[in-house]
Image 1 (tube, rainbow, N blue to C red):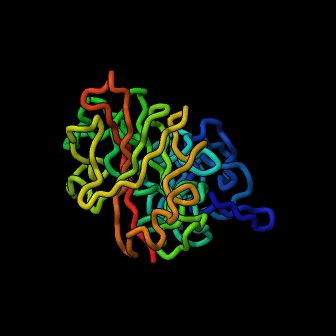
Image 2: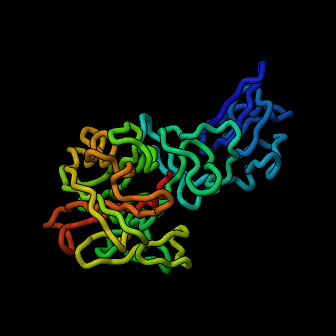
Image 3: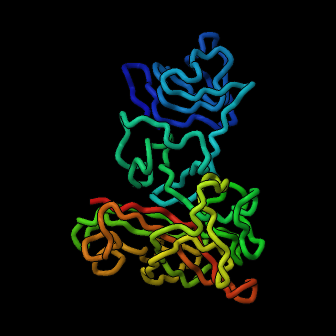
Length: 319
């Protein structure tokens, strides 16, 4: 949320105001009514924002100033995930891939990074709110929707999950990317592209891989409009990264199933002599790669070979 004080008033832009449960005063409401999704205070301007439920007499109009304004009769669901560690110093609510908050924000008054320090925008326009959604593919909830690829062990994650097929601990492993994907950064640059992991089995061996394309390439796929991946004999999860695949080294998850939290991520200062995107790593400006992690699962509980996968992230390298 962007808040700008104009004298005694506040301007709100490129923000999500939704999901509150307590009624708060809507100062744009000339009748003095209360509504659950509008902040208290003297609001002078709301632009390019999503308000889940404005109060009855609110002067806000759906579609005006680029806003999405819901009402009690027709609320707008921002389709936000639970408050989680999605990377960065604070927990955030990640919009689902089909959230109405994605690619609709203006660039005015927007910092070049989101609340986590990840770059904006990714794709088209920036996303509303604190978190810029990355291009997630091969989510482990694909089998819950008609026409999508089922997880091979009937281990689909709940709908809307960002992560792979459920592993032996009942969680979906989430691959997270941060940093600058520029290929011209010098070796050892602290802001180089790096990857971390959450939700893996504790102490599991984790391998980062990448490929030139997604398996399968299916523009008609209905899994949130993204490719759902293919079942693969070695994995309890879905294989996504394909063609000219590369391995980027192994890491051991810590006791909470994370990589990059109490131990080194892939790339950046904790990576090889040159980071994943830096000159010498073999990637070129404008090249797109699809990154996915493979994790060791509990062999006694797996239905195949005790290997599972995260979702995949699309990265286009910058000059």
